[in-house]
Every structure is written in structure tokens, then in C-alpha cells.
Image (tube, helix red, strand yellow):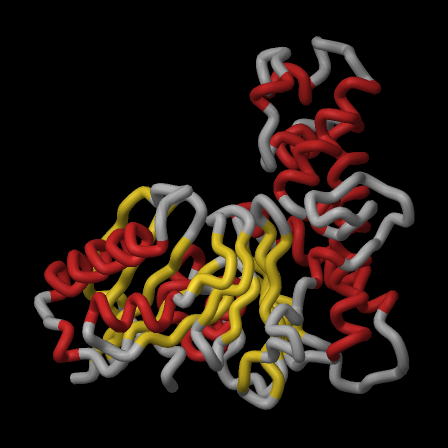
Length: 317
């Protein structure tokens, strides 16, 4: 039996899994990410969590061929250097070299969205595709591109930032510095902003959408508009229709640019299932360029929060 170790480094948590040859996670480790901290302290956090996962799985560091890690930011995979990650305060962090010294094992470093896409490609919704794209709707819009079976990272190691393509000229300001980025409208954060804006424009506290949050805007989340729509609230329906149009616009851009075989969408919003996906497919089908006989398949991601762990674990493959 072969075993692999994958680390999903996030701004909030470090999640580690030991993955077997059937791509099942058989041992886990998890700790809060403590930042800002020194490079040495970060490697210690990663190593401690990784060894906890190995212990949980009942295997040792000698039983795995490499350590794979997915991290936010711009990653030079060839050198194993995180050139920049604003949320983790990394600047030219030699993660590969330092973690190898700490764990005495080869380390492979990749961008976290790319690692998640690779996990879906190896073991999830993108399995069997030649060219594929994974989109994650979370705090932002993450994306990972697979071309001819390989992660595409571009000349500067930061290709695939589809969330920072502009869909509304001079629109909402984005943390990246641009205005109108896709992620400002189609992320969970963007949906919450749209929901609050619509509620403030329709302040009837007796309406279903206001009752859902007990009259408090602080209780609005990514489900509020969808729940309100199902309750017959026209404000909720308007927000959902607008959200689907924004999401569809960005996805159509992705399809027209890359023409993937399969495009999978992950993140908590996808728990809406076909309520979300069916109209999104219709939108993209209308907006897709050309008369392609074989349309891009749009589906829900399968691996959930484990995609990053599984993808990181299998990077050496």
C-alpha cells in the first residue's frame, strides 16, 4: 500500500491528511494557523501538524515518498519559494528548503487553488478530463487550470486568477487593487454584499428576507437570498437572479478563454445544487462562443474541503 502526505495551508487553519493509493484520507492533523510569525515558526507549525496526521494514520515519514503542500500566494514551484502571500505575510519564503530540512523528506510546493484543482483532477469531478478548470466560491473566487493533465501556472507562477478578471467596469473595489473583479460579485462575500444592498433598498422588516435574519443585517449569509427566494420573497429572487448572471458571466469568460472539457464549481454556495447549477448552465450555454458541438460540462466539485489535501498529497504524481 502506498501512502502520500498532503498539507493544505490556509490563513485560518493548517489541515493535513495522509492519503492512500485509493485516494482516501486515512489520517488527519489540524491546527490553527498562527501568523504573522517567523519562517522557522511557520515550518514548525507545518511539521507538527504533519507528524500528527502521520501518527493518526499509523504510518511514519519513511512510508511516504514526498510531502506536498498547497499554500495561498504566488508560488515558484521549481524553486519551492512562496514569492508573495499577503494573508500569510510571506515574501520570498523558501518553504521547500526549510520544510525539507525540518522533515527530512522531499517537499513539493504549489498554490492552494492549483492543488485543489489537481485533487479534483486526480480523484474527483475532473477525473478523466484532458483540459479542466476548478472554480471555488469562497471568501474570494479561487481557480485552478489543468491543461493536458498538468497544472498551468504561467510565466510568473500566478496564472489562473480568474477571480480577478473584471466583469463590471468601474465596479466594486477589490483588494487586489482593481475595480469590478469577478470575485467581488460571485464569491460568497460578494453575494452577501449584494443581499445587504438589496435589503437596504427594500427596508420592509416584515418581508421574508428580513424575517430570515431577525431584522439584523449582521445575520446575512450566503444562503439568505436563496432561502428568501424559496419563501416567495421578490427581493431574494432578484438577488439570486443577479448573482446567477454575474456567476454565469464569469464562467462564460472562462469557457470562452480555455474551452475545458469539464468545469467544476466548489464552495459552500454549491450546496444549493441544481437551484444554482441549472440556470448557470443555461446562461453559459447562451454565452459560449462559437458552434462547438461538444460543450463544456459544468458540475459540482466532489471533494469539498479535502480537495486541497488530496491534490497536495498527489503533487509528485
